Image (cartoon, rainbow, N blue to C red; front, side, top):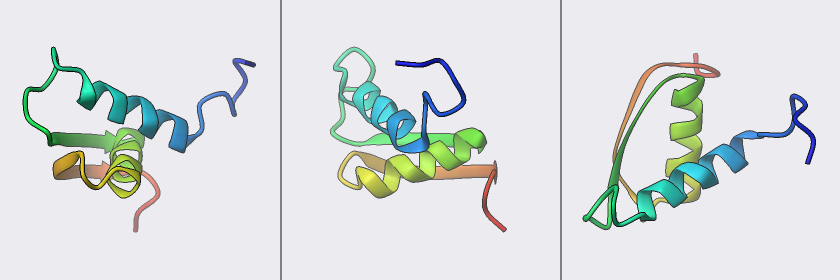
Length: 67
C-alpha cells in the first residue's frame, strides 16, 4: 500500500482504534472511552459511529470537521 495522503483514510484509522479497544492488555471492559483532539476528534467520532458497541464515552476537544 502507498504511503501517500490517502493511505490512512478515516475509516481505516477508526478501525485501528477499534482494534486497540479489543486488546485485552489495553482494556478489560467491553467498552472503551475515547478522547480525541483536532483530527483525533474526527477519528474518535468515526470510531464511535462505526463501532457503537465498543465506545463507552466519547469526548471531542476541538474536533476537526465539526462546526
